[in-house]
Image (tube, rainbow, N blue to C red; front, side):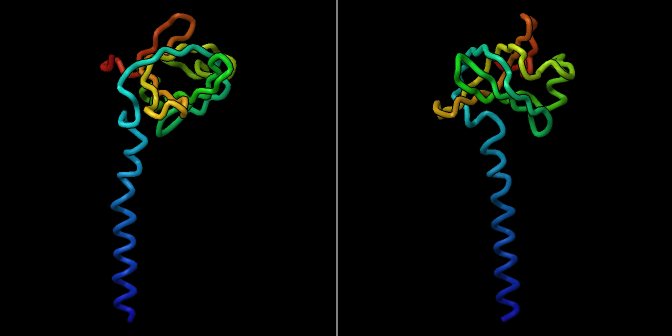
Length: 125
């Protein structure tokens, strides 16, 4: 009986571990986006920066959009400094929106602050 329990536990752990990378890759990357760019301008209401990537909540004409920005190293490489992405700052975002249009979510490729471009993904167009 103990052998059956041990095998069952091992099988469940194996299934859980096998599914973990799939769940993570479903959100990260670009597979959830439309593949086309949109252009949004709004005011940052909240900024949560860090790993695995930063997230901004942006008021765009009375609608809240979630904007995924880069990982800390990517934001640094683009030239963003501490405090650039902060509550009350007007931001223009060019990026790929979610294929679920009701989500109002976009993955930023380029960010503009006061007309200055910050290319998070310069290899993407």
